[in-house]
Length: 378
Image (cartoon, rainbow, N blue to C red; front, side, top):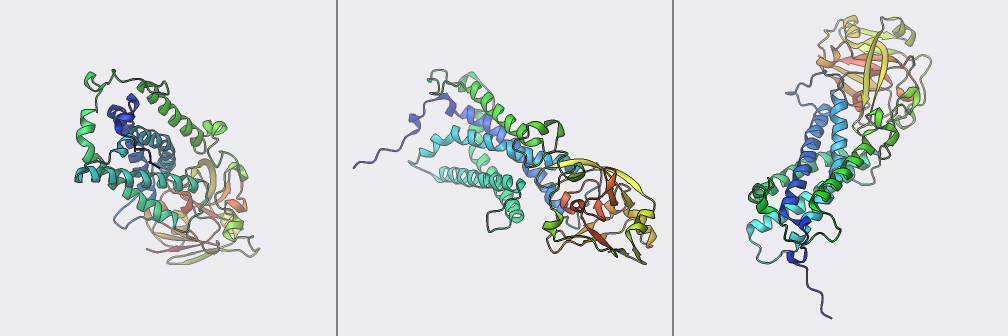
């Protein structure tokens, strides 16, 4: 039985497969990928800050903005990637007379498309906190990001002459003599459809960080104002192995002097208020009103300078974030609190009762809950 011949580029005569269309969609996709990469890099350095890098504590809502933009750009990239691949897939059937440049081009497309698809897929499942794979998400997500950027640079270098030729709309590159697409779409119609699809999925996801879009955020795993005390919960006390707090619970701070306080004694110290968001790496965020003792006041009480580096220790049983560190910029910031109250009431257990850290411009995983000890490191 004779197998049917592979289709050739001439089999795809629709103007929707023209290089001009691929160039326009490629520009849109590149913008989304670069924004997603840069904001993801900022998030990575927030959680793993090298000694040479000093991340400021202000603007207070910077991480809320960048991480929301990270998840939004990744979500929008999905329909853009699908449209881009559909536009260029006829080229994949051209397998005759491949030179070194052609092999590099197809290899870069293969690596770029597969790595980007995997990155977007596991990134979305991370927003659901579902990890059905054996490899560590954070390290894999970070490594894939660099693979994508490398493959993208190779692809751009190989395709630069074609991109340059079709970067601007000119009469020379508009194939009006070709028949219309079988779908009836014009190229302008395709652009509008793709832009509309990208906007729709973006609006359907961004509601987890922009309350105005909460009612239509069907793709958002969390909704604003939904949770104990009007604030979503990412990791419950049960998940963290914190079943309750003993009646003799005490908070300690170890510095030049070692101090110990009961909860009532902490409440008797001068209290401050900070209006700050919780902004999690999964992209959701929610503003809240926090009350408690400034970290810099606690440092002063134990005889440590406000510019100290501080280790925060939780009652959480194990886990990657049972401890965290406050760099000097954050410990000295007047908005950084050992929070005891949330939105006018005592902290709920799922929000870190009896005490938690809240600081400006920090990922939610570093806003340590169920705090029982601070250690001055420097």
